[in-house]
Image (cartoon, rainbow, N blue to C red; front, side, top):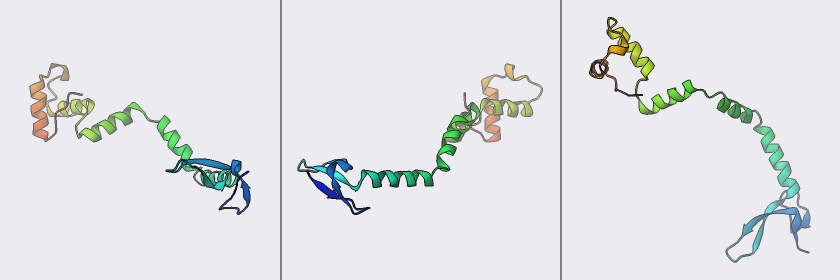
Length: 120
């Protein structure tokens, strides 16, 4: 039975106590430099050190809303959303209701304010 020395604890252990790492160019099986027990201790210590970071990232993903999605979409495109454009239009021409606006008038108001037109 083959044995190997663990680089962490220094003990000689059978090959079955080491995780496989794949084969080299000549097809010979290679093993990790640390035994399974030392690897498990290392991973437990590592995950304990970053424990505060992990739940926060998972929680943020669950709290992602449609408003966040629209905000990210608009930040990437550099345009104004329809809700913002209707507010701007109502401020610019309060005498007209938004449902009666032709597209050309809205586009000209966008140009007047130096904004990019979007059909969201």
